Length: 450
Image 1 (cartoon, rainbow, N blue to C red):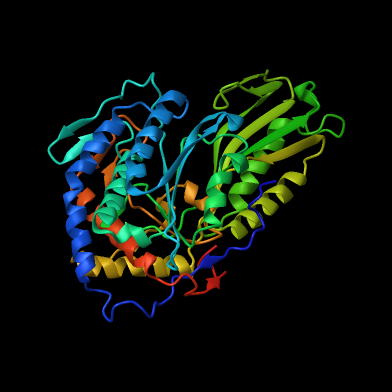
Image 2 (image 1 turned 60 degrees about the vertical axis):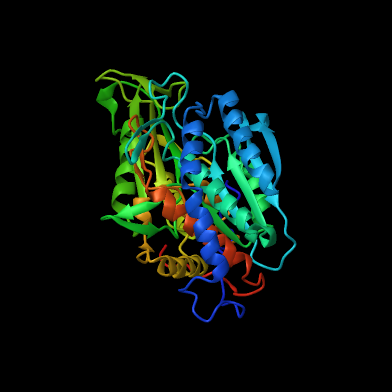
């Protein structure tokens, strides 16, 4: 059904490193130099943001996506990364950037995750970068070309101070995060392969805030689409509910949907019905998001269709919910039939002890920088992302992009002052992880919630 269902939820806990300074809430001399170098990269990173935003890279604009990818490759190569553009025509998408920096050290190997594409295709009227004081507006300015610029700024700071020389870093920048290629298992194969050679993953989507406070994302819920189809024998409405005519496809459709509403509720799970039609005939249109139906008041419905999504906090919760949904569907009304199909979808990034330990390490850096500690963002407040495809393999933390508003809509903005703290946080976290022994910590399958 989907390759990740049934897999154990394992995470590498970032353990205590004997080599760490006695007080990790203070900065070493080298770290102070990294902070100074990171501050010097702020303006340059914002200039890179403008350059990237002014290139349309809607997912289906393959040339634009590749152009953004080539710019990122040109930024990373001088820092000592081996860079590669990998075409993804086999899954109907532009391609991805794979960049590797092998230091051959014994510290934690870090995987940096991002994406080159936006939701704004060339026909969108929202196309250009515009700065108004400390706010920048433009397509993808916060989802996630800000994250790309911050990533480069942090790596430049590490390179300038020599700290990058001992860091093992792999970067995967997808060209289809906003509209994944199919099959997704193939579209994300390079990302999964990179995760198998890493210990920690950092995702550069926007920094979440709550009531003006920066928050850490240690969990993301899944996102799986489903399609329900009901069928029945058509006939004159005068015979509905009889043994001969049955109940019709629309009653079967509403029975199932209402049973979902009443019987599936549990913490951290949601299941939306986004499209619902039925009649003598019903069909989903070629665009996949609209439908057509026909029927008469005196004709028993022969076809019904509903489409929706399922979001869960863990893959185990997904398995449980899917099994219950299938059981509900199978209990047909007389004279009807129904099928339930699930897309590959995005798996869940469950909250683990390892993810919490990684956030704790970041909060040590926050203390050293004079920033307030970051609490855990409620996973109900954030959607799915690419990091979820590797969250069963290593410790994960999300939100190394900037603070912004209005992602996926014209008028999307980013708060430019947040670049400074994000470049510093990122650089220091990579530096400290590079000095943390790779074999420290343990793997745990405990999941909080779900």
